[in-house]
Length: 317
Ligand SMILES: *[C@@H]1O[C@H](CO)[C@@H](O)[C@H](O)[C@H]1NC(C)=O
Ligand SMILES: *[C@@H]1O[C@H](CO)[C@@H](O)[C@H](O)[C@H]1NC(C)=O
Image 1 (spheres, rainbow, N blue to C red):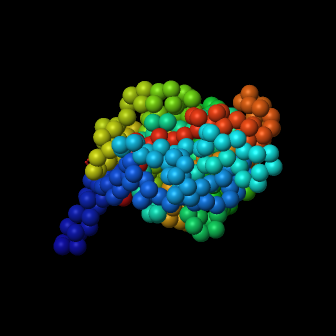
Image 2 (cartoon, helix red, strand yellow):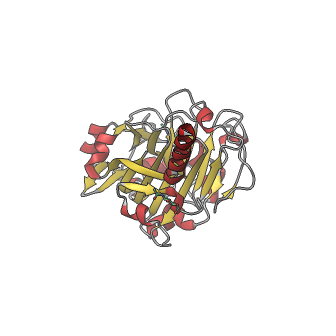
Image 3 (cartoon, rainbow, N blue to C red):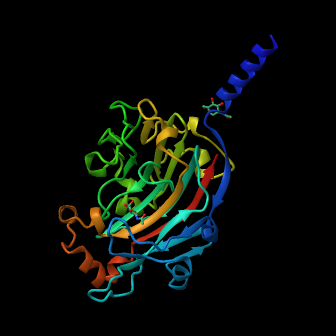
């Protein structure tokens, strides 16, 4: 009798608190310098870029806070000499904290745009890739089109064709070895989700919810309305059960989430050119100059809009 009552209480609690999270990090303004490390490492995707460390980013005014807003810029003033081994100064930030099941909300006012840019807000782990898994929340190239949300994993993680999401599935196999490392991408349904159109409406909110049962990603533009009150408020608690249909949904039906995804750090980076943004066909489709590296070297002024402005990142667990 006692045991039955106890079990009933547990399952009631689980039902009531599904989707309910409390804030563990409120990252705004200069707080980004504490929450993230700047990684001065080579870019594995062969970008024409030089990721700088934190003191350099601060000295060159590439990273700074203005009130609660935090800015991250690529260099937009220096002509890079022909044949220089280093590309244009830019940034790669990794969160000091790592997360398993969590919600993270990215309130972004502006994202990098323009020919040659390849910005990303994403999550991955520190065990060998792709065994740790990768979640691309916001990623794209040359300021083009709409956002693609994607997972990259070891072989054995696939997605059902029919899912409850507003985006359009591109590939269903998350295996990084399949489809030229496209992952199991989902195209966001709004042009406001990326690049100049995103920036034209002062950006919006991206959110991830990761549980053992699914990884869901939402996007709400600042112009379209419909942002949930708790996301807008950025307060101490959120209830994802009230957020409606996600933009991209990755259920665990045929992908054991805890098996394919280790604890993750948040990564924010901007590379220039490289394997995707600098590919000749991709440049041509975007109407960008064909020699991406020379364009980056010679045209600092083309990178004035190659910056992120974050209003906040809030993490809930
Ligand atoms: C920077 O971002 C791009 C896009 O996500 C990624 O492919 C590349 O590997 C990143 N560079 C580093 C050093 O993480
Ligand atoms: C979260 O939202 C759902 C759906 O509206 C609701 O049923 C549930 O009671 C909410 N949870 C809490 C703790 O407020």
